[in-house]
Image (cartoon, rainbow, N blue to C red; front, side, top):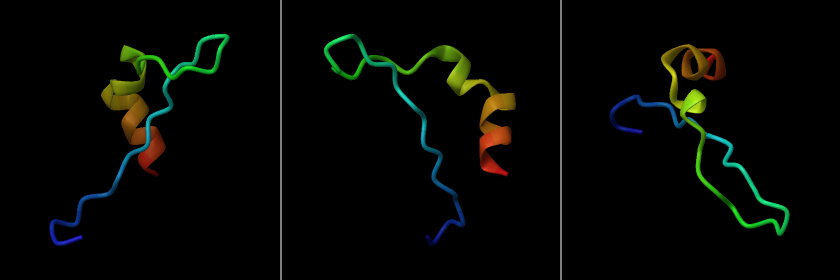
Length: 38
């Protein structure tokens, strides 16, 4: 990438039918993102 940015993949929730739901707020916390980025 030109900017040197690294992609971060967040896991969404799914309901009992397998439909993808929202990404929980705790997935977007700085601590969680830093842990996943290592």
